[in-house]
Image 1 (spheres, rainbow, N blue to C red):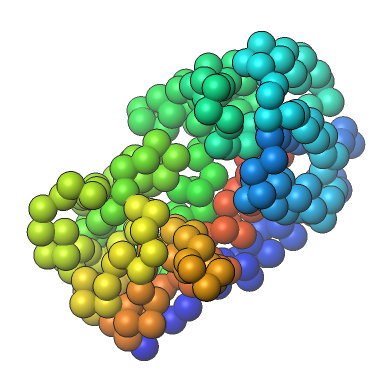
Image 2: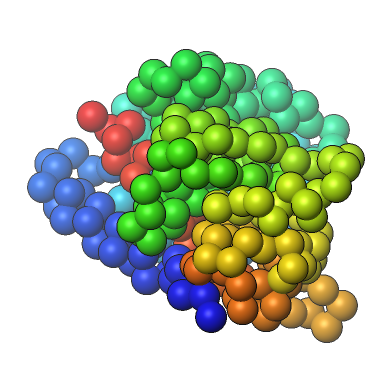
Length: 275
């Protein structure tokens, strides 16, 4: 039976470390969150981030804009935040309304204040191994893998999902830590056969219970990035947890796994941006 990787407890430890560092810094750390529209999930995420800021002693700035906000109006807000010295980190909550070009919005954020790590310059820094803010969810995944005490070097790692937000960057981070990485997706042939060879399996495809227990190598580390709400209202991951935990060595739950770690990494990126 797998050992549970408790993302909530690990995130709390990281937040406590950040709180101590914040207390030793004279200038208040400022994080600005821009929320456009009334997406319920986005509103929940923003509230969680605001609460986390308060817990570690950050000053949070929230800019709520209507669904009808124009591209120019959003860019004006971002440009103002780029030059505001009291703001060290800027986060634009995704997804944005369909009439907004997300790429242009992300490009408008100063790379040094891009605490989400999505700006192309920061993605490029990740690719070539330079320092810079790392995407929060992939960095949270890496922290969870490290928490098992496993040496990643030489391990076979399989990432299911190729998004710019999770799949691609976490693949690069695993490669950076000397794993041999295979990135799979919805069109990958013989996916179960590939998955079962993984010492480390990261599921980030956005389909509930997609990864079955017999896809898991005995003793593998399984990190479930999926957050899916099913018909009964319950939130589940991309991995069939009950069957997978019987074969995995370590496994992250949903909820209480990657979600809290993503916010913890956002706080860490913000305090680093203040230096």
